[in-house]
Amino acid sequence: MEAEFNLKPDELIKKLWDFGSMPLPPYIKDDAKNAKHRERYQTVYAENQGAVAAPTAGLHFTPDMFSSLREKGVIIAPVTLHVGLGTFESISEEDIRTHRMHSENYEVSGKTAAAVNTAKTAGKKIFTVGTTSMRVLEAATSPGDGLIPGKGSTSIYIYPGYKFKTVDRLITNFHLPKTSLLALVSAFAGLENIRRAYAAAIAEKYRLFSYGDSMLIL
Image (cartoon, rainbow, N blue to C red):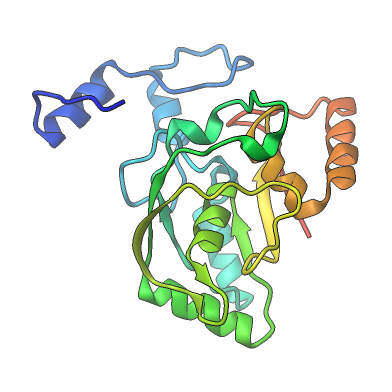
């Protein structure tokens, strides 16, 4: 379904900021229009508008942390994915393989593609912050050619059995049941490993949703 607005893009964005509310998890009781959350519900490296939600795995990073990583020789390479509501849609099918993802727009710069491809050739590990970034890298990778720069759209759906082409490590939140995000991390870490991790998270009362705890999958 498509909707047409009788406002210019900048006017529409202003209306959304004026009347919209932040998608806060239920364990946060503050006013969803609170300016504090409007500032915090965003990564320190965000540049482009267009997604329906922040890439929440990156909320844990700070400028000081990035400086520390760079001092250790870590190369930070950004990508863009305009996340749509389909990413968070529950899987209702009995067979998860029949689930279909909505298409989302992405962009990979030439600088990022070169950095990733050079690192892979040198045998370095590619750490990805968030399932959205992972989907961009996997969708834009061509066997034999590596990560391809450019703009495009992807409806890539990653579930157990998927063979990863680029990503070696993943930083991500704890995701909700019956979502494609949980299917993705199960494909990456192995279903039994994820079951054990989530059992531990539940036992320790970790928080899920967008402001929740994060994990590094090695």
